[in-house]
Image 1 (cartoon, rainbow, N blue to C red):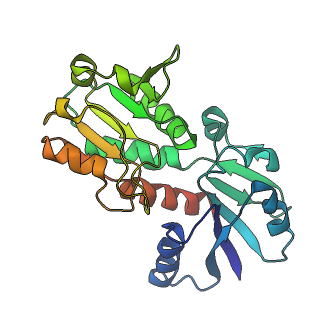
Image 2 (cartoon, rainbow, N blue to C red):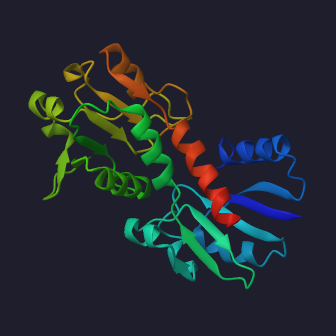
Image 3 (cartoon, rainbow, N blue to C red):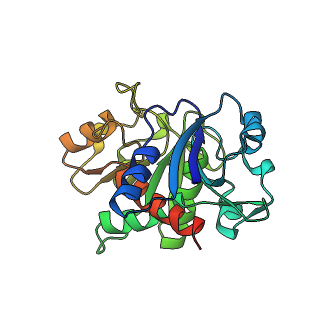
Length: 245
């Protein structure tokens, strides 16, 4: 039995196991199983590899998308550029190759979400591994962007700096942080929601709950909103393609 799985921290509410289990059932794939592999630290990954299971590939989630890289033998060019990995292919000789399917899932879903007749600029909330895939996709789509974090730096806005002018100038706002994710469902990014209009597109990479406070506040101001489910489906299918290429 070929075993695929998700490595991360606290995985009881993960998307991947449910998605791939249903995919295997739906498509009549009988020689594969998908498991969650929660790791308290990334150092436990080595023991997992020695477990004797027929491990063929992994998804990687928070907080290990960058920490996993030293354990890999090689990186796909896109993953190298992004500096984060969310898919590992286990080769027949045991070598581990890192990829980033978040890039594909985000890029394709964003293109389907936003207006094609507008020159957009984006604010990217957060600076973690998911943010790196997001900004790489934005660059490839020709969409200028600014990072937003709690602390201002040379190439980063702070939340306190976001005023009416900046909010009006940036029509796409992407939450790449875990704010609002179950079980911390009452948290949300500290942007000035009062400046949002029906010309804004709020994309929350969080998918559980289905509507975050970030999305709800945007919708109440007339903004277009979307959660991370389309990106997740896109990245999952890309992962399956990578494992079976």
